[in-house]
Image (cartoon, rainbow, N blue to C red; front, top):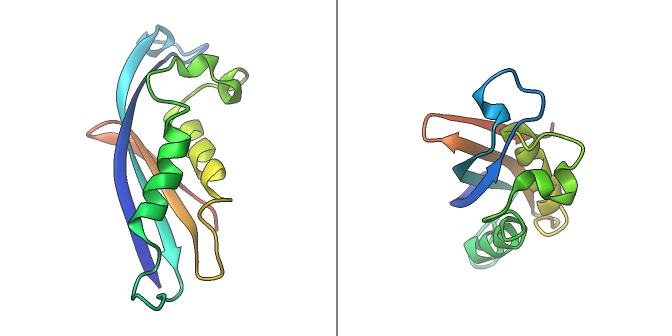
Length: 123
């Protein structure tokens, strides 16, 4: 098995509805994102998946989040745009584009700060 990853980021604002503290107020983050794709074997070029393939798929998803109020995003009208929910959303959006007979999206890590974040994956 090979775990291929890319690190990137986006900037966006949000607030956590019904949160008992400061995060209930609008604020922003420079969110870090790590996407890991797991490959079972290498292709004829010796790659599990081309980094460009991963970057293009991730950029397509993050472009819908970057410099936005995440609470106004259609996927977060009913649920809070927490790091956890963002990680699930990004993962699910990537599943169709990062899947082949050799590889699939394995995990998405979202960080609000350099020292705090969450990783989502499916068993």
